[in-house]
Image (tube, rainbow, N blue to C red; front, side, top):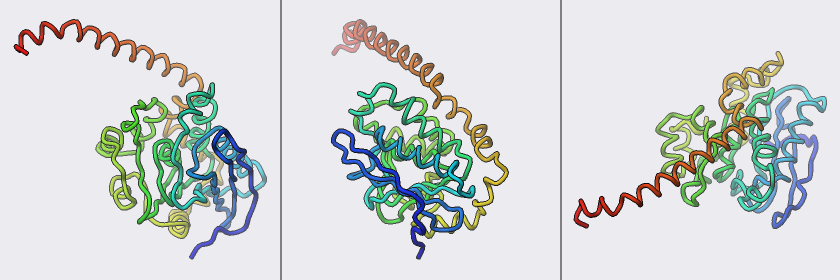
Length: 276
């Protein structure tokens, strides 16, 4: 059975509003394998405090004198990988999306080492988005679901949030995930391409060994290759990309409002034709 290994460092997640805070801990369960564990009860919400601590940890791994290798991101909470955003905090914090959340997504998407999201429990909404910005995913076979449930609480997806699913998933999986808010178990997630395998840390380490992932960052171009591979998402995750898409969203919403107003104006005549 694999263990979490030698402790390298721990960073605090300061308390924020109703969130009590927590820690981001990095250990080394195998040579040049860095296990980044997020523990922020009750469900690892992606607040400014949590995202900043993760970003700091990724900087320390890259620039702190450690051998280039592989980063595994997981949770210290058995029930959740992450339950996504605190919507009140996200909507009420100026610049949160481009300056915090998208910065974290972009950091993982272009990180100069292979990354694996290890999901011990639920990965909902923004939590699953975070996992999707990793190179590989390993999910608990018996506990937890992967889900994008924005449909259920009436929040549309931004371009930067949806593009990663479009780039990495089969079209039918993307449809079921977004338009049905389907909850995928571990085995279903493997079959549909959401995750690479089921299991825990031992299986994640097995994936690293089989694919020789600890060697991939040695030439120094791993992050550049990913940036080119996922250039659509990288573009959306920048401040300029965010501003451009916000303007598109504004125009789309205005167009939808006009469409509804025009339909209401025609409705009386349509009802008369239908003899309603």
